[in-house]
Amino acid sequence: MKRSWYLVLSLMAMLALLASACNATPAPETQTPAPTTEAPIDDDWGRIQAAGKMVVGTSADYPPFEFINEQNDFDGFDMVVIREVGKRLGLEIELKDISFDGLIAALKGNQIDGIIAAMSATAERDKEVDFTMNYYVGTDAILVKEGSTLVINTAEDMAGKKIGVQAGTLHETWVQDNLVAAGKSQEADISRYERAELAIADLKNGRVEVVAMDYFAAKAYVAQGGVTMALEQNLSGENMAIAVREGSSRLQEQLDTVIQQMWDDGTISQMAETYLGGEVIEEEADPEVTDAEWEAIVAAGKMVIGTSADYPPFEFINEQNDFDGFDMIIIREIGKRLGLEIELKDISFDGLIAALKGNQIDGIIAAMSATAERDKEVDFTINYHIGTDAILVKEGSTLVINTADDMAGKKIGVQAGTLHETWVQDNLVAAGKSQDADISRYERAELAIADLKNGRVDVVAMDYYAAKAYIAQGGITMALEQNLAGENMAVAVREGAAGLQWHLNQVIQEMLDDGFIEQVADQYLGAIE
Picture: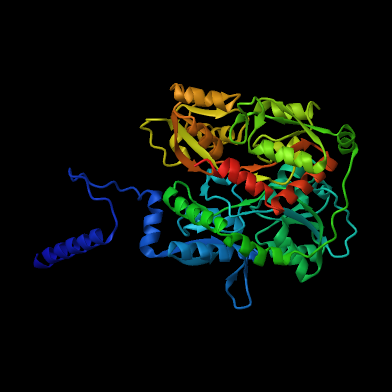
């Protein structure tokens, strides 16, 4: 009996010590027993802070992004990025090497706190995890064995070949969606590898004829010899971000803050120059591409561009009744550098692609992201802007929106045809969290804002900077800034308009290199605070 009483006292003392050591919320005054369910995922940041350490998963077979160096240590662009993130947050970074297609399961299974592995923030992955803002935007390459006689002019030329891809990557998705599902390739001809180096080994050994992967990782393998690059092409619009557990908004916010700092002070650009730029072998300039469509535009001296002028600060009608906004300045400068007049046509956003395919316009600039779905109907230039998103509520609203999922059950407004509509459909309606009847889809963003002010909808999801512009007009406020859709804004042209696409790409790259786009962004986007 005495022994039992001593044991009870000992246990009570241990529990008291544990309770005081933890950074837990005080128990309610009613002394209601705490629920037995696990602590909210949003405690991740508090737990990591308390431990002074963040455990991050990677797949160290993808140079120059992540690899094991001669000193048997993790190295690469992603590795220096995450270590700098840790340094700025005052955290030790513990790295774990996991096969790429096992990383999300490891994160969801609480084996790691985050992922950095040249992983793109896609809509599919966003259903399982949350992503920070982008720390890198990539492009892709198709490799062949050195000495191969294969001619690969477009990615579709891989059709009918034996193709190697790393499992779980956007390259696998692209091959599946655009070749296998389209009946251009047989499933039996696609080899999926746990690690990229195995795909390269099979390419060298002749077991596969082509391998699709990230451009800079491809350059690193080319430097090792035995393989060569057949094509550089933007297959998947990779937007690399750090993944965290779904709902881990406090950790996500801390990471976003530091990544933004690293963009602003040039740290990421310096790291990219060291690890990515240094891998690039100087090549002769690509020969000029032309076709009948480009030649007709040149002959006319004019390019007709469609937009949807209801999305300030990207595109809107100003007090002089003229087209204005970030996109408008960009496209007019493109025209100027190409020696072309730009004729603008105002069309509802969800009618733009139909207008382009119907030859009513030559191109589209309308804060439009280059998604895989849209890429099936039109072709895109390189990105001229990477965006983020916002959730708006009426001024004075008592709604608390900590994550985008908190829109569930609310009356939601979105512009038809946008990535925000897609996100709401895929993540709330399809998941059974919202009723389709509660989603209002608008031809123009200003109509969604009007209904928000009038109380017909509870929240509106849209681009962050467009949201800031509407906030400046009064009556609404921002409840949340979050990367919902991974927007990568590009100019759309008709499918197969290779000449026009090539000339636009040359000028956009020039405008990125000489700082013109950055100056316009500062004027139209950064100025709205």
